[in-house]
Length: 114
Image (cartoon, rainbow, N blue to C red; front, side):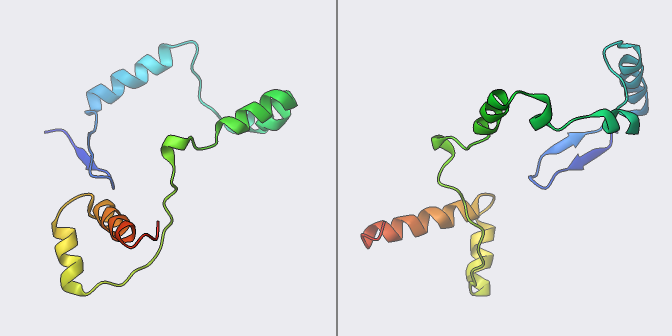
């Protein structure tokens, strides 16, 4: 049975077997376009701001902005619930925080605060 790893998000990753790992490494070693990034490579590396022209660098930086579809930004906070309320929320399954957010938004709408 292959080794698996569960990520923090709940995804299951099936790790390669030693034989598969050997095949992967052999493929990497045989590829003339790949190489190990060593300390000497990093010593020669330049920051993007020095490598690209100022215009291109500005465009690259502008591309890192969140698009309107990704807004609103979520803001981390701390809130205290009674233990039984929190247990019930968590028992409702994955996405309980998103559902609490939606419930709070709905509550605000009914109060004309949003």
